[in-house]
Length: 120
Image (tube, rainbow, N blue to C red; front, side, top):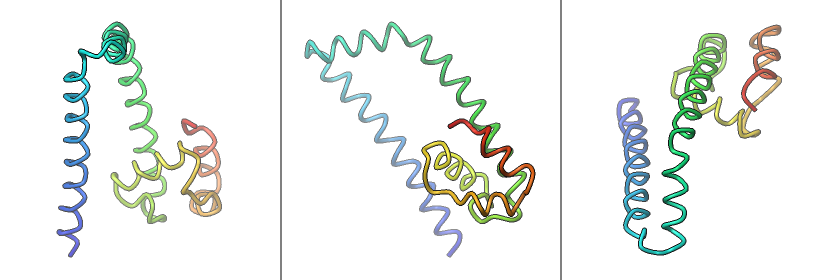
C-alpha cells in the first residue's frame, strides 16, 4: 500500500506541474487582450529580478527543509521524510498546521530557535 501511496503523491505533483504549464500556455494564448498584454510585458520586464528572487528563496527554503528534516525527522511524523518536511515547513511559513509544543519537546533548544528563525 505504501508504494501505491507514493505513486499517488508523485501523480499529484505531476498533475500540479502540468496544470501550471497549461495555465502559462493559456495566459500566452490570451495575450491579445490589452490587459493581459500589459501583464505579460510587465512579467517579461521583471523576469530577471524574479528569477534571482526565486533562486535565493529556493536555496534558503531548501536549507530550512533539510535542517528540519535532520533535526526532527526521527522524532516527529511531520518531518519523517524530505517531502513531508517540505510540506510542514511550507505550513510553518504560511502560519498554520504546526504544533509548536511538539517541536519544543522534540528539540528543547534547537526547536524554538529554528522555528523562530524560519522564513515567516
